[in-house]
Amino acid sequence: MLRLSAALVLSVLATVTLADPSGTVRVVDGDTLSVGGVTVRLHGIDAPETDQFCGGNGAPSWPCGAWVGNELRARVQGRHATCRAIDTDRYGRVVAKCFVDGKDIGQELVRDGLAFAYRKYSWDYDLDEKSAAVKDRGLHGTGIQSPAAFRRASRAGLAAASDPGAPAGCVIKGNISSKGRRIYHMPGQEWYSRTRINTAKGERWFCSEAEARAAGWRRAAR
Image 1 (cartoon, rainbow, N blue to C red):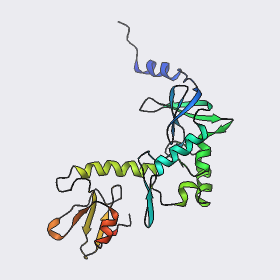
Image 2: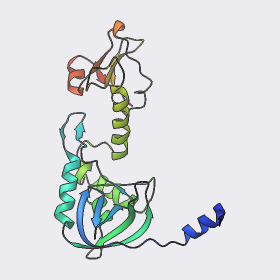
Image 3: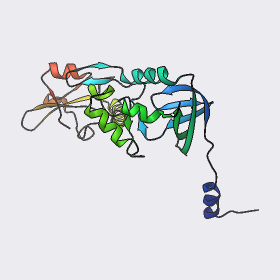
Image 4: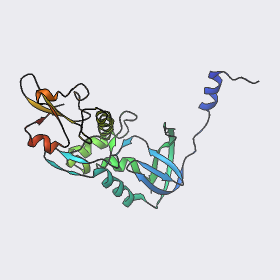
């Protein structure tokens, strides 16, 4: 039986060149496309999740994730794109920069405030995001939670929902500090996972921020 060393396998894999997708665009969500039938995750950007809402802290809640997806469809759906493959992600998608009429789709989205520079993986669009933020373009002009923070909050919310003391769908923790201050913690905030609810002390779960504020609680600073 032929046995290959791990080093040899890695060497062989390193020589494999990713194909550069091209073809008609179909928008999957704010940062994912189907290009010529190949699923492509746009490199270096992070757009709101499809089910993500923005707002809060006095700004009305609105479906920003769906809005970004629709804006991207208006721009590139049905058009021809050429992409430069960079990597593949853990979901098997090709990670690439894609271009329509010579314009970098990801860069255009970040410049217009429809997506964020995904600095965890690339700093290519750092200045584009900063420019959009200074000018309050797109998402920067209203209350917005970064997509990464939204995903963390969603995971924390799922964990909270498994708490036997939490009512169904109510994941906001209303805590009373040692000084008697009533503070509520949202999923994804720094102290959320470490906060325990003791109903005997008057602490409670809330189903919405409006409910928490109406009951006299204020949002935790972090």
